[in-house]
Image (cartoon, rainbow, N blue to C red; front, side, top):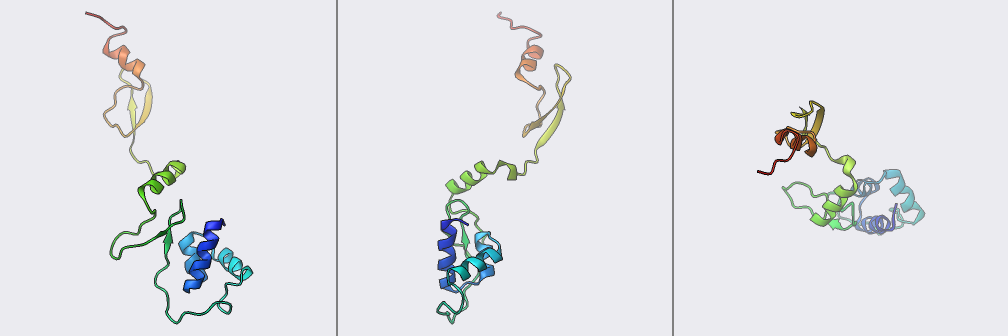
Length: 141
């Protein structure tokens, strides 16, 4: 748990959110939120209870921790901006679901290879392309 998450927990507890909603909003376990709140005197007995029940759990940007306002009737935002979205995906390449892998046989050397995103590929490398295209050498005519 970092300092940004701790300040978010404090502000959400003062707004009247429960441990489960805070944990869900910040991507933490409920037990870690509960124990941190108890250690820092953020239980219901220690807070001024709001009469109103708060709405759905707020969401926060996983990169910078900024609060994200969600629009009703639209898809839930995960990031506060495109900059944060790109930064997160660049730092988590293993989470990308790449489906466009294609298997080929090279037209020049006959080697089997795979390529991502180009289903019309013929050659495994540039050298095979040159060898097949120019039949083994470069002609200057």
